Amino acid sequence: MADPAFLRALVSPAPPVAICDGVNAALSRHRRLLPARVDQDLDCAVWNIELSGDLKAAVVAVARALGSARQPCSVVFDAQSATPVLPDDSFAREIEGVLGAVVGVVLRDQPASQWVSRRALTLGPDGFSVRQPQAFGAQSATTDRWALVEFGTPTQLLKVELNGVPVDALSRLCHAVGDERGGLLHIGAYPGISQRSGQPLIVLECSDSAKSPLHRALSILDIETTRYGGAVGRTVALSFLPLAGLLRTLAARMPLDASPNQVIETHLGQARA
Image (cartoon, rainbow, N blue to C red; front, side, top):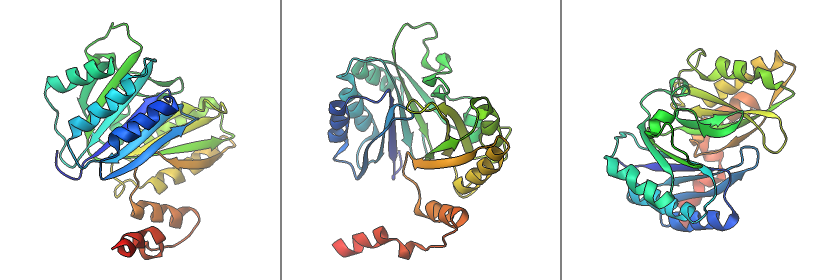
C-alpha cells in the first residue's frame, strides 16, 4: 500500500482494559496512534493508526492481542490508503488463525452513501452485526467471532447523538443524509441505539470531505430532526479528522471563523524542533 497508510480497528463489544492495553502496546511503534476510544453508547473500542510499517503486521498484532480474550466479538479492520488493493487469500487465513474468527476481506470501491447497503459487518439498531454473511464465505457458519478487513481510501467517522427524536424516525433520517436516496454522495449514515441511554444516534462516515463535508451532513440532520420535535446533540469523532474539516464545521455551526494558525497544536511541532 502506498504511504501514507492508515488502519482503523473497531471492536464490539468493548474489550476489557487489559486487552485494550495490549492493543495499544502492539501498535505503539507506529507513527501516530490514537489510543483506544471506548464508546459506551456503541459498546465498542476504536483505534486509529497512521502506519509506519507493514499493514499486515499491524493487523496481525491487533488480532493477536484481541485473540487472548475468548469472548464473542465483531471486529472491523479498515485498511486505508490512496490506492487500495486486495491481498491474496493467505491474508484472511492468517488473521483467522490468530483471532479465532471467521474473516472476510473486501475492497471498498464505492462512495460512502452507496457502501451503506453493501457493508458486510456494520452498526444497526441492534448493535454491530453481520449484514452480508456471503462476504465471509461462511453463510451457515456457527460462530460468535467475526472479523472484516476492508481495503479502501481514507474515511472519517463521526458519532451524532440525537435528542428527543423517536426511534422509528432513525431510518428516515439516515435516508435523508447518508444513503443512495440522500443528497450527499460521500456521506454514509448508520443508525444506532445507545447502549448507555437507550436514545437514538447516527454514525456518519465521510469518504470525501471536500465534496461532501461533514458540516453539511449535520445541517441536513438539523433540519430533519426538527420535523420530529428533536435536535442534533453532541458529536464525537471516532477517527482522524482533517483540521480543515473541523474548522469548516466550527464556522458553519457556531459560527466561529478560525484559521489553522490560531490552533495551538499546529505550532507544537515547530516548538519541539
